[in-house]
Image (cartoon, rainbow, N blue to C red):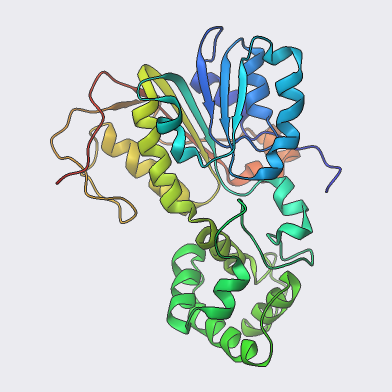
Length: 317
């Protein structure tokens, strides 16, 4: 594990968006190392945190037994954040924070298989179940792999990469991260002075596919709509364009600014009253000061909204 301390991305901006206060019930949908949860507890709020990664428990233990959580003000639920409405009930919380993507701790642990910079098993699962990245790379056909690389990684040479992987896996299956990264690099003609490693987009795509991140985000936004009280606040921090597009479209739709539509979600109710009011136009970005000390924040975007009195939108029949 890295000795570099984890820094919660855009924490001041998230606190401003959620305005946690004594007596409020806040959901930290992506607990990670607990930076958001700690700040919410310091404000006097009660916090229910969600994280599907079993290793998050080690970061939760000090909060659960520490003075900040006195009176049972903190609880970690080992589950996806899309389970928040079922776990807590509808119209039950005052705020929801979602900090998306892979955490720096997960990237730093070679055994998790997220990074092409460290040798480890080709896993990439945030939780403890489901197929691994190795399962996908070694079993999916060329078209399926190419689609994953193109849609989730926006890799323009997706078919070429998929062809290289299929040829290589006939000789030996992929089991290690550096092995996969090297083959992807060869398929794309090497680095040739590029600042970004050639395997970046392929690894991103596999991680998203393995963890069903985009469909989980859609489900999480729907769950937040159900779980928030009238006047409750939602803050979502994204790290790449695919995530941000989904959040932007969802909030714009729910605020009555665009027609319904997302290929990741079922058809939505039409003609419904807006269930959210945007806190500000567009997306906020990390301050130059934060971007200078925390590289992960440089691609971060924050969108925030407030729950209205309108009923939850239901899927169209």
